[in-house]
Image (cartoon, rainbow, N blue to C red; front, side):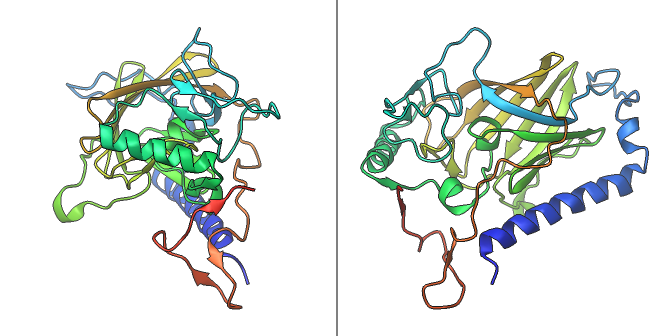
Length: 303
């Protein structure tokens, strides 16, 4: 029997393909070519004359120019403010738990700083709780943009930006719609994202995100998180993303993090970054598949 993780990955790929199919249906066979055509101007919008060429894969998520970070910190959400536990194996960038390593600049309220410290301590003692590495859970927002190997592959159209990464597809609507309210709110891992252009900068507002974490050291955020991104191209092969994060539940003030993404030499790679296996979210101990809910799953021991 197939595992739930494998099925989930297949559904994610199917969903991504469906979204792309919808894009072609909406924009027609010339949709991608038209992405470089002049945009309609409104009295209040400050849009670029043509859409920038962001299509293709972007990798990295490193710190701003001129900032040196400790070895092994590049994959963390805020690599400028991090303590990296010395690695006797000199493993460098790691995917998955990094025992003892933690972010140091999160403006947590005292009770949530203690929660994070307890998570780091438990990881160092041999129990990991990151469900992305151990359970094939989507990165979610804002981790997909700052605490992942990506963010992934961009497909930029006049009315929507798709960001496809691993087992999820993020959609940023550029058609002037607003966030849903009341009974129309639908919480998701990546939330609801709306964007507009201010010159050559894409300003993205995201809310309605599930509670999650920022990177593999498992610093938590609540489901009240609100993220504003300012994404711009600073040279032919580099995107800059200035993120401002508000979380009235866990943070004492807005938190700013700036990340850089480098254009992949292979514009559309034929592989993903996922290392999800077929055994990680399904209990087969009774001879049949049994879905384990998040509240039922125990932390995975470090291997």
